[in-house]
Image (cartoon, rainbow, N blue to C red; front, side, top):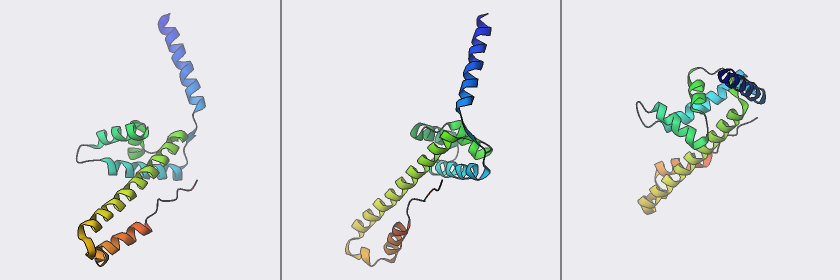
Length: 140
């Protein structure tokens, strides 16, 4: 009797959970989300064999389910709308973080080279790159 009661509770909770979830199956949106996931994972992986741990770190940092990252990497077919929005926010945050790191490294390089920094073609090219790079506009 207890087992039957628990199974009924489980079924009821699953039905309620599924009814509150909006799934997205648009191929263009799924493709965009898969690209964001791929990019986040690529930036997070520290070396060979680190893929599962990289996904766990992304899960902790951005509250993205590890299983969703795996699905987007290997078999993208549907996605929960709220996860799509979290993935979008994570991608934007990571892109901004990378741009800030690039700016900081450029400042360190300029400080280390001193007066010759303005005449160095490599530094001028890096400054042009930083000036041209802006966080990508994600249209919805």
